Length: 76
Image (tube, rainbow, N blue to C red; front, top):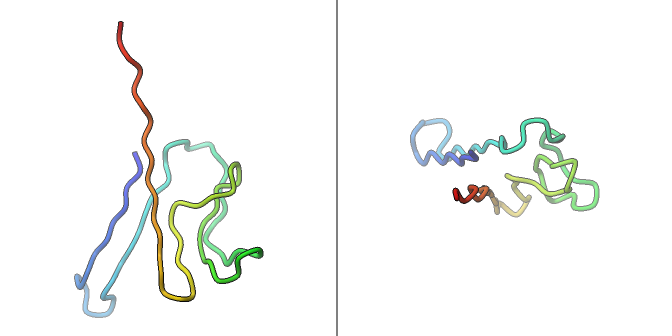
């Protein structure tokens, strides 16, 4: 299950805390958050298999987070 956590004004030193996990495929390779060479304004982790991300922030103070789901199998 993928989760996104947003804490708004929960701590006096950190007015906004955003966190996300990426655990749908534990063995899938990923890279830690870094500025992307082809998009230097983006700071995000990277899925090394498909090239995308699950949580990122831009220098212009916009952020995006993504979760996904898997469809269950139908029982006969």
